[in-house]
Image (cartoon, rainbow, N blue to C red; front, side, top):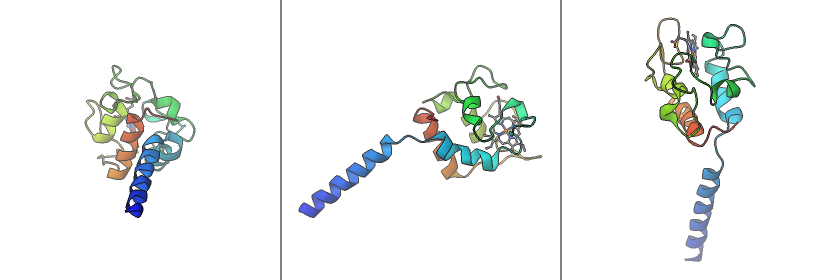
Length: 127
Ligand code: HEC
């Protein structure tokens, strides 16, 4: 009985700790973009002016208007549905192709990577 209560307390404590640590751009999102995007969105002539290279992406994305669809922010903290970045990654954007694109086609990021980015936006797009 007592052990059961302790296990229950431990599980709840872990759940609370996890939900209270919001996803971090620098720690969790930027590594995905460095791996998948900087080939085209690097510091030298980035596509659509969007530079996602190390240390630059956050300021370029959060509360910044999209070039393709200027009525949307690239990232609206807390609101993936109104974040144009999210539409590009989900392949639901009104303009251009889904990201990451290649020369002739586009593909989607892994489900686990998309989940991290979605949670990062939902949890307020922390640096
Ligand atoms: C092979 C080159 C290439 C890769 C790789 C690539 N992009 Fe792009 N990206 C483009 C081009 C070209 C455009 C403009 C045309 C279009 O939207 O298809 C663009 C446009 C965008 C836009 C729209 C910018 C705006 O202001 O409206 C976003 C957001 C974006 N990319 C994000 C990403 C992300 C995030 C990744 C990585 C997951 C990525 N891209 C990977 C070439 C690329």
